[in-house]
Length: 64
Image 1 (cartoon, one colour):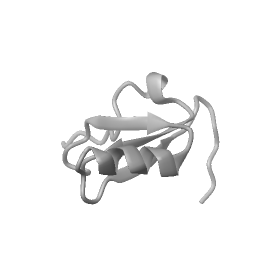
Image 2: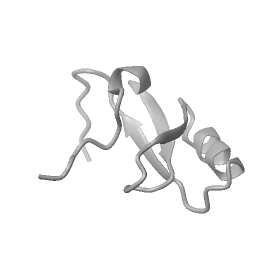
Image 3: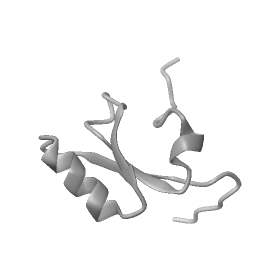
């Protein structure tokens, strides 16, 4: 079975947005509380289309 975890060290990124190069390359390259700033940092690192995710806090309920 494939690894279904998107972000490792979730405690470190709890309540923050993270940027990764892609869904295949899951290494976090930028993080913060403002998704636009996280996106901008990833772009400055040369990532053409970064993947931005929100890492919920423990026991946080998100409804989409």
